Every structure is written in structure tokens, then in C-alpha cells.
Amino acid sequence: MGRQALSSIAILLPLITATANAVSEAPRPRGVGPDFAKYYKDATSFTCISNPELKLDVSRINDDYCDCPDGSDEPGTSACSYISPLSPKQPSRYGATKINASQALPGFYCKNKGHIASYVPFTNVNDGVCDYELCCDGSDEWEGVGGIKCEDRCAKIGKEWKKQDEARQKGLGNANRRRKELVAEAERLRKEVEDRIQTLQAQIKGQEVKVEALIRTLADVERSEKGKVVRGAGREGSWALRTVKDERDAAKSKMGELEAILKRFKEEYNPNFNDEGVKRAVKAWEDYAASQPVEEDNSARDRDLEDLLNPSSESAIKWDDFDTEEESDVELLYKFEEYLPTPVRTWVDEKLRALRITLIENGILADPHTDSPESKRVTDARDQLSSAQRDLDNDRNELTKHNEDLTKEYGPDSIFRALKGVCVNQDSGEYTYEHCFLDKTTQKPKKGGGHTGMGNFVRIEKITVDDDLPADGKGLGSGERYALKYENGQHCWNGPNRSTLVVLACAEKDEIWKIVEEEKCVYRMEVGTPAVCGVKEGHQTVLPAHNEL
Ligand code: MAN
View 1 (spheres, helix red, strand yellow):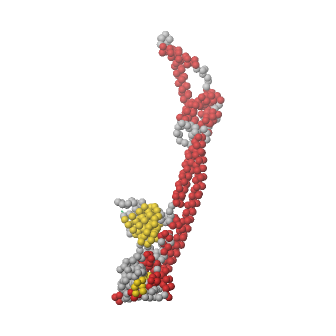
View 2 (cartoon, protein in one colour; view 1 turned 180 degrees about the vertical axis):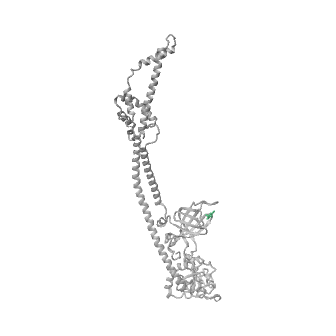
View 3 (cartoon, helix red, strand yellow; view 1 turned 60 degrees about the horizontal axis):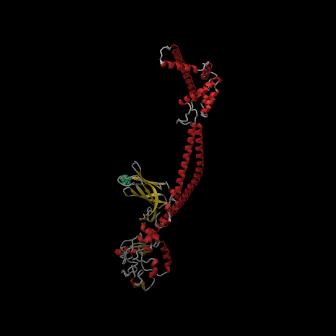
């Protein structure tokens, strides 16, 4: 059964009841539907429906001559069919109230007993063609033009239609159930977002406190790390002390040699040569020699020092004890001093300053004035802070995303929330097309090769469509429909970025019905989904009657 028949039938369902009520009344003239019976009650005269000033004798009804300007005196013939002939769509789509103002009647009324009553356009009356789609009882060909006889097929057609209608009702039931599930799922998902927001808000508060604490910890660690000994101080310390001692010995021996030379020079020079330069040098030497303390015997002190540096000696400094990261260089120096036997302590005290410089120069002691690599403790504290800050940033970003999500448009009952990311595929020509709800559309070559993005979701729209509905109901029909707009897909050579308008209509399950490339790289998909079934704004409450399922 074609669309016209079904849609006409559907809209005229109430007429069946009206007909039943009218059974006891006087028979109506041929072609008059029950809604218009009241105009034809008078047994003697007839008043043109849209022109009440024109009164005719009843004999002029259906006399195959058009008297009334609105054609109302010829409900059962084609005599007035030239007056703004009705489009076959009109009665089915809008009902009798919306017909062209110049026409009083929607068409020739077929009772279609055993099926559903319907109007057929006046042009089809007695045109020699059986219009079974609209007039299954064949009454439109009552004159038998050219000997045609249209048998009454309403019983058979009605039975078939009933079967289909049952399937439609079942489909609609399934679609409505599915829609309810989707609404519940959408609600659940929305609650999930709200819950997550609460969790994140609490988490962020805790995380902020943690970050503040870690900032303080890092500052403390950095402070306590200043002046620290770096690892390996023991080994290097031993080496450094040895160097200091060796350098001292070398300097001492050089000094001895120089003193001996100068001493000899003073004893051996000839004062008779009145050389001012020589005299000045001798005087300087005498002053120096006089100021020098009496040379002590340092051999015991040097032996002690040797012991300190000899690892096999009992009094050797335990340099490994300095390999700790917990003590500052000040503490180290105190510790170092404790090791010293009293005889050498004073001497070592003098040398400590020089030793510290040597240690710093050799990278053994941390120099507070240089950018030496930071210690593990500082690095760890810094890492912990960075990681906590990262977690905090992530939580904040997620919170922003979820808050935005709650203000986003998700269609009627927020139902598209439940379909977001759900994908359906359909082969068409050399491609398989994919539609992922509220995400993207994609074109995939069947022969392989790269996929082409046909657009990313941008918004939900409402558009008005006016399409014929296929017999299987897999089409848009007419009225307002929800549409999903996808933009900014892969750039089209010599054209725009690809975009897709996905127009939705009620269906039992999600499926792509049709893909059209309306202009180069501008696509339109027709997609069935239970999500838009029974949606008031979309005029889809009447879908079962319109055979959309
Ligand atoms: C590919 C497909 C087509 C499109 C052309 C444009 O072949 O995406 O749909 O029309 O590119 O060059």
C-alpha cells in the first residue's frame, strides 16, 4: 500500500466513527463525506457551501454541471474538478479544514467499507482508472467509463493494512519503550555528571590544601639543603686534606730554600760596593728574619696529621661518616674538628677556612652562591608538588568540562545525552558512512584507504521537512524534525570543509536511511531513531497514523 493511501486513511480515521453515527440519517448524495452531510439535508434546495447567497434546486446536485463557485453542488462527479483541484496530499496532510479556500470539499468520499474511509481528488472521479490506493471500494468509477468496472477490494486491502498496522503499532510500542529507556539513561548520565561535580569540588578543596602544604615543604627543604655536603664528600675530603698538606710541605720547602739563599746573600755580599738596591734587599731580609718566631719542632703534629690521613691508622678520619645528606657543612666542620687531637687542632683550625674553600672549589661542599644540581630531597619535594599541582589542574579542568556539559543542549528530555557517541553505519555507493551521535560523521571508502571526516558535532537544530514517506516508513515524512549539525570536517579540495546535516525521524532502532551529497562536500543524512518518537514539537505524536514505523 502506498503512502498516499495510508496517510489519507490515517487522517480520516475519525470519519469512520462519524459514518457509523450517521447510519440512521438520510442517505447523503454520492461523494459527500459525513463531515459535510449537514449541507445536503434539505430535501428540496441546496445552498452552495461557501456562497450561501446561491440556492439551487436539489436536482442540480451531482447533475454533472458545475453551478456553485466552490464546486459544492458536484460532490460525486468531476464536473467542478477544474476549481483549484486538490492536491492528493492536501486532505491527508492537513485535513478538510485546510483545503484551498475556493474548494468547499476535500474530494470525492469513498466509504471503503471494511477498510478506512478516504477522499479521492475530483479529477480522479470517473477517469477510467481504479484508484484503489485511496478508494479501495472502487466507488470513484461509478459511471463505468469505457466499460471499466472497479471491484470492491476493501476486504483484502483492509486485512493487509490491519496486519501492517499491527506491525506498526508493535514497532511504535518498541520505539516508545526504547525511548523511555533512553530518557532514563540520559537522566542517569546527567546525575552521574552532577555526582562527579560534587566529588571533584571536594577533591579540589583537599588538593588545594595539599598543594599549599607541599609549597611550604619545598621551601623548608630548599632552606635546609643550603650549604649541604654532596655525596662523595668522604672520598674527596680525604683527597683534599692530603692535597692541602702536600701543598703546605711543598711551600715550606720552597720557603726554606729561599731563606737559605737570602741568608747566604746577606753573609756574602760586599758592603763596600755602595749599591742602594742591594742594601735595601739586605735590610728587608733582616727585618723579615727578626719578625719570624723561633721555629718550633712540628714533627709530632705532622705525624698526627699523617695518622689522620692514613686509612689503616686507628685515629684516621672516618670520611664515610661525612657521606650523609642530612648535615650542613657547618655541622660537618664541627664533626671534623672533633676528630683532631689537641696538638693539631689549632693548626687545623687555621687551615679549615682554606680547606672549606678547597672543598667548595672541588665541588665537595655545596656552594650557596652557585647553581649546583639540587639534592634528591629538593627534587622529591618539587616532584611531589608538581604532581599535586597537576592533579589539581586536571580536577579543575574536568570540573569546568562537567559544569559546561550541564548547560549544553541535549534535545527533548536531554535524550541525546544517552545517544552521545553511539555510532551507526550504512553502505552507500563506494563508501560506508558512519554517524556517531553528537560526535562526528565519517566517510569510509569500501575499497580501503583513509577515512574522511564529514564534520564534528556543533549543535541541535529544528528544521521543517516535506517529504513523501516510503511504504516501509523509513523516511522523514513532513513536519518539524530534529536535526544534528556537524561542521568543520576534512577540507574539500577546491571546496569547503565537509559538513553534514543529520535529520532525525522516529524509528524502532537507530539507523541511517539515506545519505545525499547535496553540494560538493555538503552532506545530508536521514537517520531513524527512537529518540525522537512521540516528541510533541516535532509533530511526531501522529507518526503511527502516518505510517512512519
Ligand atoms: C571524496 C568524497 C566525496 C567528495 C570528493 C570531493 O571523493 O569525500 O564525497 O565529493 O572527495 O573532492
